[in-house]
Length: 57
Image (cartoon, rainbow, N blue to C red; front, side):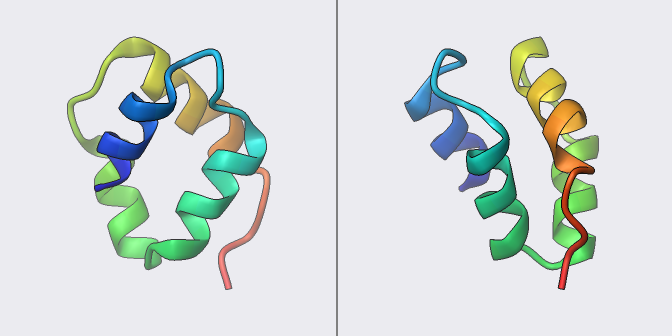
């Protein structure tokens, strides 16, 4: 579902706020699975760039 949301928004519209909201909606385990999943390079870059900015929980 998270990958679909990123795809729908497109790389021009994915920022720290989008990744923060996705991270907040997932458990830590689910977020780690997302990070490890196969995705386009721009998605992986956004997840890595913005995914560590906020602590979950």
